[in-house]
Length: 224
Image 1 (tube, rainbow, N blue to C red):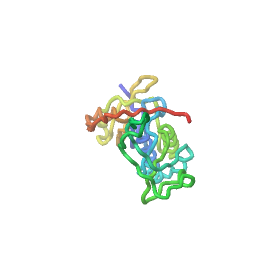
Image 2: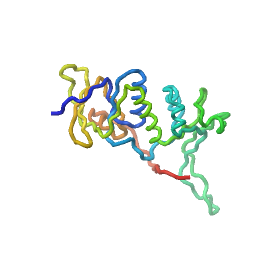
Image 3: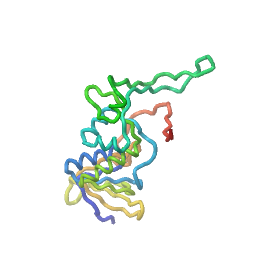
Image 4: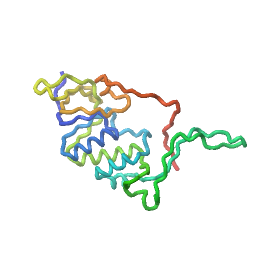
C-alpha cells in the first residue's frame, strides 16, 4: 500500500524543456509545483539545438533571456535545410534539394544582435543552444522561484481514481528509481510533458496522431 508522500497544486511528469518551462512559469505565478523525472538527471543527449522566434519571445517574457545568453545561447539568422548533396555531373557535388528555408532577418548584425533579445516585428532569428544547456537554465530558474521542486529518479507508474476526500484531486503512483518503492502523489492538476512516448498520455488512452518523415536525422556532438 503506497503512502501519500507529497501533495502540490500541479504535478508535472517530465523534466525536459517543456516540463521545466511550465514549472518555471507556474512557480513565477506563485503556484506550488512538483516535477518528476524518471532519469537521474537532465538528459545530456544531443537533441534540439535551435529554437524559433516564438520560443525566444516566451523565454524573454519569462525574464530569463540574460540567463539564456550567460548559459551559452546566441542568435543567428538565415537557414537552409536540404537533402544530401548530389552529383553536379562534373565529378563533384552540389547541394541537395531545398526542403525548407528560414529567411534572414533584415538588418541583423551578428556582432550586435547575436546576444541581444529578439525584436518584433519581425524576428527571424534562431536561438542556438544545446537542449541540455537550456534545461540546466530552466531547472535553476524554476527552483529559484521557491515554488517548484524537481525530483529526479521518479517514474510515473499509474493514474488512480480521484481522492476519496476530494474528487477534484488527481492521484498517481510514482516509483522511486533507487528504492523501487511506490509512492502516492496528489495534485489538483497533472501535466504530461514526458515526450513522444509519453507514459501519461498512454495511461489516459490519448492518441498521438501524426506521421513519420522518410528522411532520417542524426543528432551528434561536434568539437570545432
